[in-house]
Length: 171
Image (cartoon, rainbow, N blue to C red; front, side, top):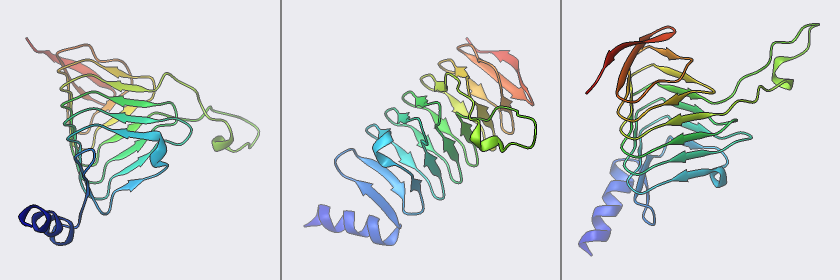
């Protein structure tokens, strides 16, 4: 009875959803739009008010990934996050966009197709950073807080700024 009462306390007092089969923790305020297109591996933790919306694509999150509060993931072109990544609060992973059109046409009627977003193992995305479609971030890399990543980031690299530029190579 001890195990089940501990689980109940976690669910009720902490307002947390617990997926026992996958050992995934997600706050009750998390939005998982089209959950059939979202794959969450063992040990994933998703904090409050985060939105995962695959749209026309998919979102795949690897083992032991931690996603902070108020993050937004749009996966129209696909998002893959490998294991042991940390995504700080208010980060945006935006695997989609729209073509620029003329003559008063609506932008949302013209989606832009890209290769999506891929985060390698042990990547850290800082608070309020944005990663745009078509970007691959290599293993053990760091995106500084507030950065906007528009191009690929090599392995073991720290990037910062808008647009993000390499500021340090890690060993």
